[in-house]
Image (cartoon, rainbow, N blue to C red; front, top):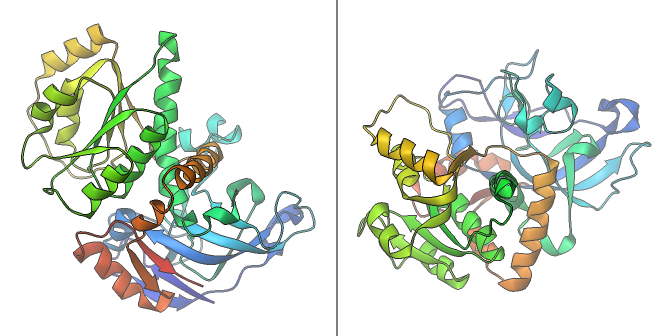
Length: 365
């Protein structure tokens, strides 16, 4: 069968190759599930892996099949599988357990291991292929009513994790009821974060660089959010009118903005960081002011990356609620389809050159 792969650490090595088709027997104990891949979303992670920034092949292999945002349909199950049946739509989680105690209790996204096992990212093949096999523990069932937007579930799960962690941390306050939120960044993650916070009843202001009106700012209006361009006024300036914020969700990929957000965060507020930034950028920050505000204001910073099954299931509930509350909104995020694995070069071009793409995804089958 065909798959899109890279040679780890070799820049621009993306290619189409023939790989062995898996079978349910590849998983011990009769627990294998064969999934036919329908769609795979791609993002900055795939771009960085192709640039050679990170990613390693599974042991004994020279290549890594990329793609971690999957959506597929079950074709066959092993004799010991009762949770799923042929015809079920599924999304696979990305992280796989290591050896820490957190891995052993199912919270493998909180591992303390130095080595990560992530499908399509590191040491495990991904989903930009025609079929894959996995265990039912790592496959989340998607209702048929969401099959047209199921490919959005993986990025949604990361958002769900961040928001859930914020609420869990602030249980210490006994009566924490956030009402105002800011989302930094109006790309895929920013739009989905705004959606998730609006579903929880918060007033949400989303910030991006592009001046409105444009597609993303109009989409935010449709779900009752507001949009502000940082080209017109800085986040700090805008917060004087719309803040203080109980929750700030950062999704820009621009690390200096984190420190500005720390300064703007309201008392008892939570700053959720979702960007994974490399490099060695340095900035000068008002350290004393930030420190004082966090100590006296009971503020919190928490990061979110990857997610375990719990947050994928929460994502299914939120996507379902979104379809009921704002019918037709979610499909508008799927802006740039790519027809077939053989058009991997077009996939990368859209990722790197098309600035107004919200979600690039490959229609595998």
